[in-house]
Length: 470
Ligand SMILES: [Zn+2]
Image 1 (spheres, rainbow, N blue to C red):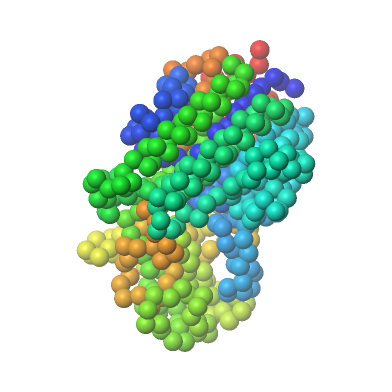
Image 2 (image 1 turned 180 degrees about the vertical axis):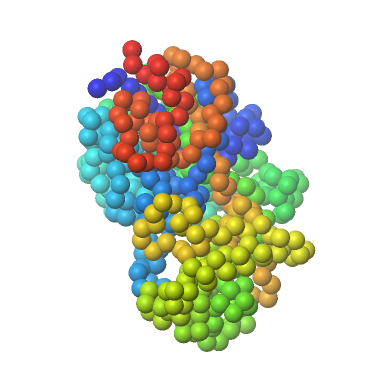
């Protein structure tokens, strides 16, 4: 075994545009780490969504290999029977499981989805989809009592698509402060070789407060009451990071990672309403007001395709023998899918210009696609626009999200920073990093080869690993 201490700071939704440029002033500690270490943008998974992105990072596998394409998934051979991704859906080994097999101990806090908890060599608090502290949310199980005895409670997440922004801001600051106290406790009281936590609060801040600071956001109002909320939250995060660094041995290596980036949300495109108007989706009765598709009777024997809303669009084809009332013969499937992809990519914005739609087949994105993958994965203007699932809307374009207020959408480029205090690399740029590179890079620190046939590569191999063994 090699002596290696690695602190991995997971900042959900940390965007290069803010952390490398615009908001450096709020994050003196993270700025210092960037200046003395290495940094670069890091391409997220397709789709760049929290679930699956963290697990793509932790296992080195693609969403296609994991069979996880978001939060909710259709069950095979059904239209609207859904299952929610959890740790039980992850069949590949995570970094901490592999390290454990080699005798290394990890502390893992808040990585999604780690609930329900699975035993490994170390300590864990599960991530934001954990229902409540009534559930078993720790490993070992006794850690739960310990945390609740010492800290009273634990907050996994807060509802963030709400109108009361003052309360939301207080709740997010509070949640992050509380988590920090527990991180400080674990980092000093428990043994570890790798300590990896994820703070989900930054993602919630971006979704709820982006328009208040960004003068380029369509809804920005100068001089608003919440203008400096993201600044304040970033200062809290940075202060927390600096305190953690003070608590770890001087030679601890520090890695900062985000699962995806963020950008202002410009609008929403009503995917199902478009499919209906184009003759792909038939409804028994068309509602006169905006209604989610699952509350409308669909005329399946007349339907060729339907979709789902979210940060990106998912389109499913209604295939004979695959769906309960499929209409597209399997021999026609590829042709129909390509024709629909082309139509989607020709969608225009309200001014008549191409909206900038990309419709991918899972086969274009992954070598294999397990589970029930969407037939098309659709990005609207590189996700500056959301996909909206409601039907019965007047216009195909909406400036509001149909599932509650939301100011930001995810962006494909997240970030990565690495700093070895003993071997500073002077702000070296990391080029072309992908989320899949993190697992092999992490394992290489401990001289462990990543599982074979992964697409990721060890980042910074020279500067990182010449110094790995002393
Ligand atoms: Zn995320």
